Length: 95
Picture (cartoon, one colour):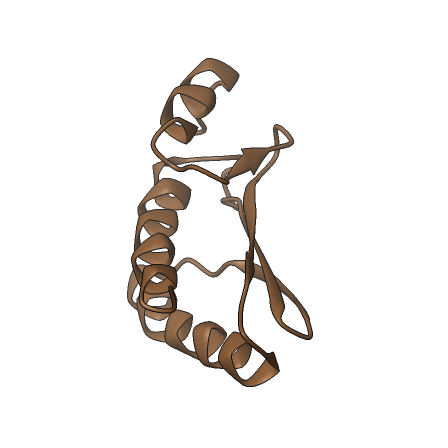
């Protein structure tokens, strides 16, 4: 079940730096260099596979933009926030 706009905004309060366009939640992380950015992306594979939920990723040198939406539900669901929580945890390892 998709979350409504108010539910999404309330949940985003727990995810500094994340935004929504109404169809997905997203954030961009900046890393030291390309190698570190790719290392971050590689660390997303196991939790994404485990959840059966895969982020849309855009890599530009040392920046990685992560977008989450539940395609089969047609919008943002709890699955997106569950994976976002894991992504935030992984990103903190690079700070």
